[in-house]
Amino acid sequence: MQPLNILQIDASARPGLSGIDPRGSHTRRLTRRFIERWQEARPQDSVAYRDVGQQPPSPVSGDWIAAAFTRPERRDEAARACLAESDMLVQELLRADLIVIGAPMYNFGLPAQLKAWLDNVVRVGVTFGFDRSRQGEPYWPMLPPGKQLVILSSRGDYGYDPGGRLGDINLVERGLSVPMGYIGLTQTHSIAIEYDEFGDERLRASISAAETAVDNLVEELVQNLLETADREPALA
Image 1 (cartoon, one colour):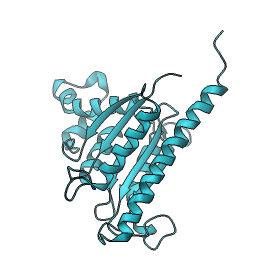
Image 2 (spheres, one colour; image 1 turned 60 degrees about the horizontal axis):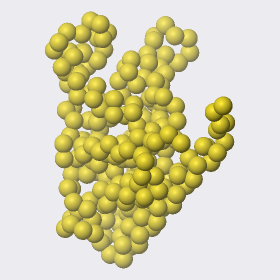
Image 3 (cartoon, one colour; image 1 turned 45 degrees about the vertical axis):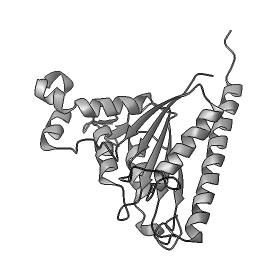
Image 4 (cartoon, rainbow, N blue to C red; image 1 turned 180 degrees about the vertical axis):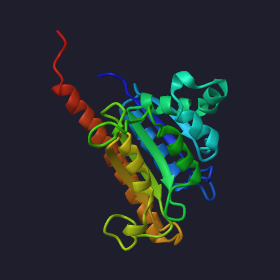
């Protein structure tokens, strides 16, 4: 079985880990646990790490838009320089087989740092195509198939899962899964910690449940890889 490439992205403004550092991040705690469990099961896989919470990408600007919508062969040096960071982030995404994102809820949606990353990787002609003369839908995804997305979130309140008391105003998972699905990454898994603002036994129980869910998800995904490999025909 070929080794996989994992892309781990942390987006919390909190630099530490909950349970270890004062006011540490719950999402960083979950992404680290996921990667540690994954590497225990599959040490042959490589992990690329990007901390957009502490080192956010540049937000999209007017010059960025002009450069992105200029055909590559017509871009001057300034336009190419404007897109250099975006090119690097896109290449990281293209190389990854599994993308693990720690995405805390800020005011019902994504942190601005993570939105900036999204805006840099959703690129016309690079991760999605557009042709106004195309019959039917003029847009199409360009990411290679088979990639999977894991969203590990945290919330101050509770009841944000689908069907919950606040499910309709949770814009975190949809804020990631919709644009990522638009460019072709449609296999999504999500786990979240809730009750952070309460800080009582409910928070502790939610952390424990989320960590168990992370362990189970790693086991499930690794098992799926093994089963897929078993179904592949042997090379002659």
